[in-house]
Image 1 (cartoon, rainbow over the protein chains, first blue to last red):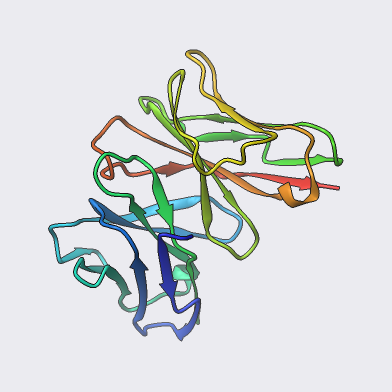
Image 2: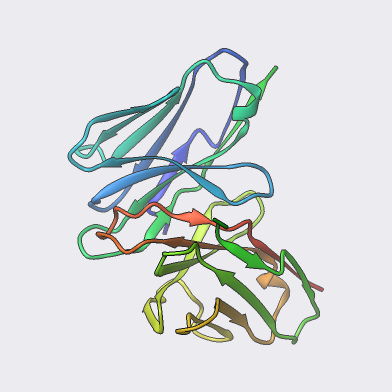
Length: 112
Length: 116
């Protein structure tokens, strides 16, 4: 079964609004990462948050991690049409594993 | 500094034929991962390799699928006797040597396999 599950599955907002996506996972992790995928393209890394961190910022992105709830959120502030894409969280399986498990993704549409 | 190169970008095969997908990792990267993505779905882990070694193939079907990453040349994902259900986008990613879970994956543009 999937390690990560994002919600919502799809999100449609107006340009300038904030977009929040959530990710839940099942096992212990070392790190959690967020990736973006534009339609028909490969994934692009956005941000990595370590298991001992609670919040991280990168430009208009803000990621939080709650290891007690096994969940993370990705906030995109002041969204732009160019942010339209699918967003995936990815987790490792914990100590000693190099395998990265991706969630089911949130499809974000930003309307101009 | 080329990124992860995958070829072919599109591949059409008839049922029963073989599909061979290639991936050249980023320069300096020693880890290669293969993922499969069905339309409107997430990525499903297939296999993780280092040079000349398969480290984790827990996501790869036991039959018809194989992967290698030779000392020289690209990593290859091979699907024998393809069936319609193999139609998907296959993504390769690479990362440098690093601690488990700490590697940022660089993805290729994917190879889209269509089985007729």
